[in-house]
Image (cartoon, rainbow, N blue to C red; front, top):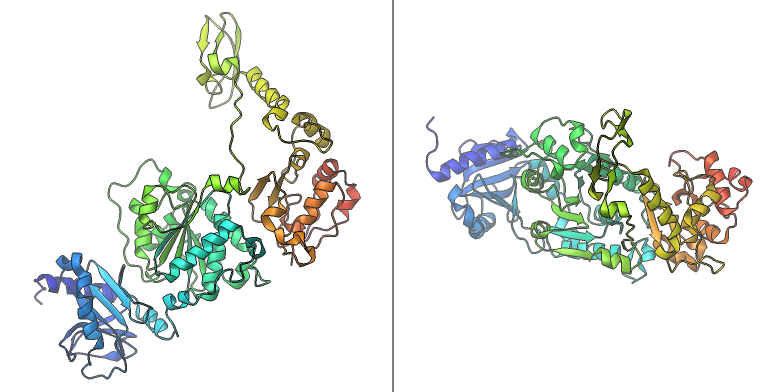
Length: 599
């Protein structure tokens, strides 16, 4: 057999290989056998306007056309789209098509562009490779395309209610509404810039829920760059309770955090590190330790990135949407191949975008919520710095000759005493690195304790006096200098700082405002209709120093007691003591009240 030689024939050899990898049976026009497979691609098929390079058949029915061009035509491949449309609208020989062919491709063997003629305002987009026959059959059975379904999504807040009524902050409502408007404008990439602590992950899960429910998304990928971020996202999805359904998110839609190369076909949401997804596409196993740190923190990078190849188990159309956490890092260079592989809309989440981030997402910023805005809205706390300096930190010090000095080995921490042979000076930069001065550390801590009223001049006790030093209050309430992770310090409650555990392992702090302002402002007027997230009874108990009411739905979201969602439990013994000491409640008020998750 003589191999093809001219550029267009060489391109067709590559296209044949790509079609075969995607599950198509490639046949010449003189040996057509529609029973050879689910999808058949016939070369040089005759039409009323001349032979088409490829006609695609699914279950014996014509569904698409491919216009092949040489590799050198890649820079102007979109100019031949009208030629592809001509073949799609032409009459086919030997078979009768009831309507124009729907799926249109232009390909060079290096670049492939695709158009779905049933999309609203159809336009081509670049794809990694051809879609599988099973995918086209599935799309043919749908009443509307994904982009058409996006056009019909209901508004997030058509009645213009306060964002708190939707269990959202104002910035979250704006981000989701603008993101959905971006989808309706057929923009494949969008960037959500939101300050740390403002709720990016919660915003993303709310958007994912609406895409699955109202747009019929097939599958969504939540992409992270460290194992820890993946675990946090999974826990938050497990805790997420939609506003219009009593069931939790994971009860409605199967969620899988990828821990191996196995991806369940029935998973509608996958959580994965970009390292693992890259290894899956490469067909390689991944050492779990490589997921502990972000790829952006790697000191060494491969000289030549290994290219991602087509994977029939995870085809490019596997995900409809990809949400990328911390998208300002780890999605460039080697790792960008993962995103370029999938035929999906990309949504970036970050608090600190840079020029690369803006460029990657085509400057389509659907949320611009900076730290300054978050502080102004009371979502975050300002980061003013109170500097405490000592003479040693500014000027350094000196070890005197014949002075006994304790020396400690860095590795073994073994101690020994030595006599200083001669005077030795040290600088402030050497403190806590080469030299440790316990007295200097104690001086800083005591100064912080004593200057607390000066650091927080606007914080006044209920009796109208400035707050007492923190250390005195801490020891009085807890009997020690430390408290357990299950408690809220009295200093925090008096100063208007309430720490709330949302039930997924992450603790939110809110300074200066009651935590109710964050989660459930609507229940100030009518607590009976409040959402299960309400923590107002606890906040009121903290303020009034009275035992909280009978638990209904409040206990599972406060940091007063930790619990697992699977089993009810009562406060630990140390928690009871801490709570009693902090708020003046009798121990019996807590010991007899079981803490149960909200239904």
